[in-house]
Amino acid sequence: MPDAFSIGQPVRVRAIYPPGHVRTPHYLRGRSGVVESIAGHFANPEELAYGRDGLPRRALYRVRFRQGELWPDYAGPAADTAVVDLYEHWLEPEGLP
Amino acid sequence: MRRHHDMGGEAAGPVDRADHDHAPWEKRVDALLRLLVDRKRRIMTVDELRRGIEELGPGAYDRMSYYQRWMASIGENLLEKGVITVDELGRKMAEVEARWRAEGWSGDGAPRGPGDA
Image 1: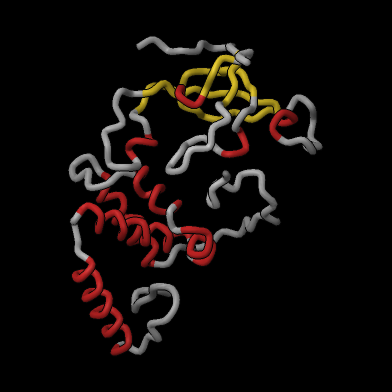
Image 2: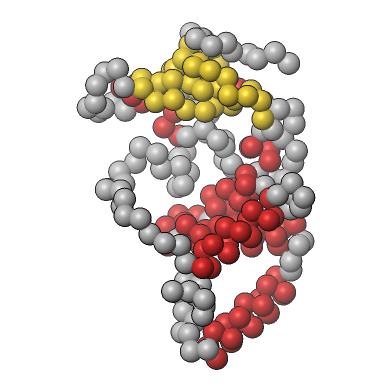
């Protein structure tokens, strides 16, 4: 299956809050960033956590966020960013309603 | 809802940057996990380890040290998978505690033994 997102593409982290083992930190939900690179394709850890095989493999993206987008009271330089590894199923294209 | 362990961005106070040695029992827990997840055995995954730690709940999560959380999760996972039984684990824990007491250790609180500094 081709990757859903490409390098440089604006994306938004899905604002969903399922119970159980997830690999997307709470502070990123609903936040917007840009795909920095594609780290590879890996068995889904959210399935591996329950003893299943995690297949098919999922694309893992390195997504860059502005620190000011993540923390309302961020006091550092405006150019500061954070890069976080996120699996494809946690991302959606930026600009959707 | 934010789960307790998912605390990125929460107020946490200063970070303790002091180096510290690991106790022998902590090194054993680390080695045990590596053997359980290796390519030869594949008895459990690090993802299952993390799930087990997250399921400890806020009280135990905060009370336990890093490797105590690992040990609790490893134990739960091995019980779920049938690698060990509750009865076996209970008997072994009693046996080890009796050995500690015979060797003069208090047997309370964190795991400890004659090999620990």
